[in-house]
Image (cartoon, rainbow, N blue to C red):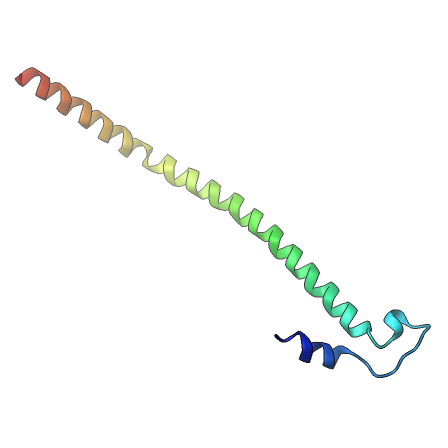
Length: 86
């Protein structure tokens, strides 16, 4: 939606054949390059954040592992109590 107004602002009026992007489109070319680079870097940020999130999840699970062991022990003991009553 904003591509038209942004391109209008970035498009120059003077054409110089020897200049980068014919001088007329230099602003558009640089803008597209910078935004493409930002998009690529944000994509890499997803993988870095995901890796750190996985490490945090593993640490969270490790912190609650004794609780899970206790719950399984309690269920095992309650199963033995029910078996001795029968």
